[in-house]
Image (cartoon, helix red, strand yellow):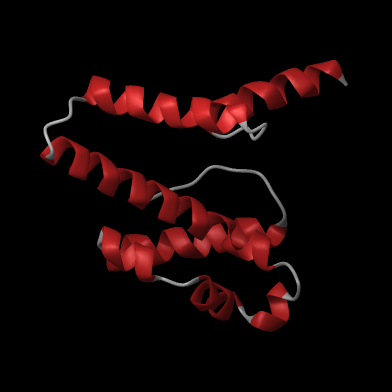
Length: 119
C-alpha cells in the first residue's frame, strides 16, 4: 500500500504509519474492516492527536472504504454480475446520492475543481 496526499501533519503521519503497518502485516480485507478508529488513534498517541481524531483516522477510513468496495465487487462478480453492470450500479448509487444534494466520489472532485476555479 502507498498513499499520496496533502493535509495536516497528523493526517500525513497517520497515512504513513498505516501504510507501513499494512505493508508489514498484509491484513485481509476483513482484518482491515475490523481495525478500529480507536486503535489508530492509540497508535498515533491520544496526546498527539488531541481533538483531531478526524485527521488521525482519515487514511483508515479511506482504506476501509476501499476494502469494502473490493468485497462488494467480489460478491457481485460471484453473483454473476459483469464489470459493466457493476459500474452501472455504482453510477446509480452516485446519481441517487446527488438527488439528495450530497456529492460523493468523482462528482465531488469535479465540483471542487469548478468551485476552486470560480474563486
